[in-house]
Amino acid sequence: TMLSKEFGKSCSQIGKIMTKPRTGTGLSETEKSYCKDWLKQQLYSRRKSFTSKYTDKGNFVESQAIEYLESALGWGFAVKNDRREYSELIEGECDVILQDAIIDLKCCWDCFTFPLFDTVIPEKDYEYQIQGYMFLYGKPKGEVIFCLMDTPEEVIQKEVRWKLGEEYTREQYEAFYATYIYSGLPDDLRIKRFQFEYNLDMIRAIESRVLECREYIASLGY
Image (tube, rainbow, N blue to C red):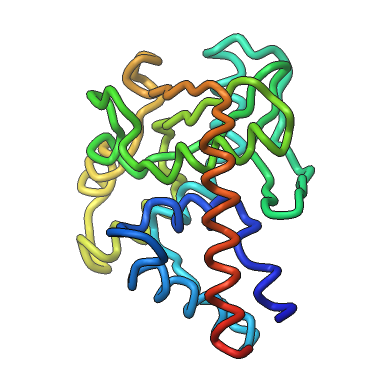
C-alpha cells in the first residue's frame, strides 16, 4: 500500500523501532504493535501525542541551550538547524550541524534525570537516531549532548501551584525556585557528551528493519 511506504522515515521513529525487543526472526509482537499504532495515526489523521513538563521544558530552553553550548564547547557560531533531509527510507531534522559533526540535543528536566555518571548512552534509541542524522547530512561524527538548563519561570510556576497550592509565601517560592536553577554550576555538571562515529552497518540494519515494518503494514490491508 502507499501508506506502508511512508513508514519509518523519521529518525526519532527509527530509534524506537530499532530498540524494540525481539526474539528469533521476524518482527516481535512489540514491533507489530508499534506499527499498528503508526498506521492508526495515518488512517484516522490523529497523532498519538505525548506532552509533559519534561518535553515542555526541553522545547522552551532548546535555543538557550544551543547558545550555552556554543560558548562552553567553543563551537563558534551555531544555530538551530531547520533543514530536513530525506532518503528513500530515512528522513530527519537534526538540532545542530557543525563542520564535521551532527549534534542531537537533549535538555534534561533536573539533575536527577541528567546522566552525570553514565559511561554509555542511557537510551540506545538515541544512538540509532544520531546514526540516521549522520547518514542524512553526510557527517562522519555525531554527538548526543545532554544539557542541564535553568527551568523557565512559567514552568516553575506550574510546579509551584501543583506542589504548594495556590497560597505560598515569597520565601517559599524563592526556595522552590532555587531548586530549578543550574546556571551557577560548572560546565562539567551541566553538559554530558556521548560521541559516535558513523557506522554503515547500523544504517543497513535500520534500512532492513524499516522494510520489514513496511511489509508488515502492507499485510494489514490498508
